[in-house]
Length: 498
Image 1 (cartoon, one colour):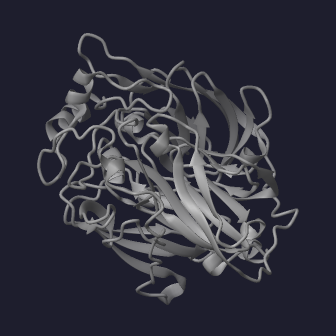
Image 2: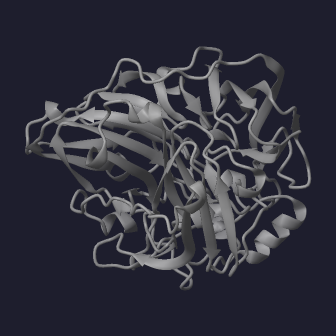
Image 3: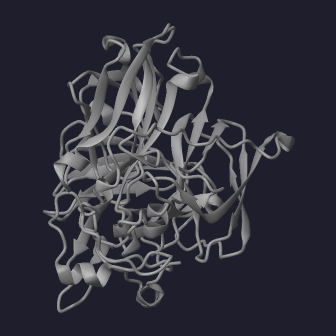
């Protein structure tokens, strides 16, 4: 389906990337760059619809928020839960009165949910019925190399592969998505993403909102033409001005006047979110990428870069039934009347509420002795004389044959990650481990970053110091910017744990 195969082939041959995706703080690309970056919808070429075509097709707060389907295992024998999943093209009713072609797991858009439990393995048989190779990465998980879904560990069209997830880690709201190098950006944009909610006895012992009052909500942006087709091109953060929650534009969410647990995922390729309730009401953050924080904290704003998760509790009992409160976003780019609103909570009825948020949620594992410190520098290098920009880590683009960092198994290291660009935001995702943020720009991290993390944002010029323990599996694992257009154009490296 992807129409830039010749460009990708050349990029693979040189170890380089395709085109730079400028993001929140970066101006829009020139008309020439946009023309070079554009490529066709799977059904054929589409004209540039302009940034407002999609939003004009989607009235706000008229469609109910859908909940993603929860998969049932095909087998529970042998002490493991086995799932069958097929990647295929399908159609979704995203915009009113229109069908949109999407790429899916099991035909679901938004992608499905797997509910798993610590200590009980999950086996997923993935079959690829798409035209392109794929690689399924369970983001945030500790898994053997052959099930990590690395960028070059491809599942070819028509093939089936078994991924094994031991779940030898504590509870966390994880997600899975395509990771095939140079293709991941478009594949995820067109729908190849789903949720993986891992629980354990610690989480289950708490009186947090549960069942129908526990809502997974994946946020992203998109661009549509007048026919309702998804329009994909690199370097299009501003043009993607339709905000989707669980695959629907600006939905309404029917809630009772009680507490809800809301698991927020930023599944965008490029967009950063800065989320708050329109009335400035309190949001209690209880978790981040790697599960619950040690203690909850109350805030009015939750910031998420692509790939990050935040677990929050909102108490709607402070609103009278009949009240609507909008979840807003203050992070550009794009027209404020569109990107500034995300969804609306409609408080419809009173309800009993036995839930509570305890003052202490968990005890995080202790930080061990440090064997080594490293510095990792992220940078986009602008191309000159007609050359495409490159994504670099420590001055080099991704080379799958190269090891960039060698780590001794069983040790703990401190990494200082630096965004060397002054006008382009990045973030940083490290496979295999959940790390601890020690400092941001030399200051202690905020309470939202005080838990276990696998993805951390870096605005222009920022640096983050983190500590990770490499004590689960040996082998080669990637680390990269999780703005997927940046990783697609080479902002990746790999460590080898021996």
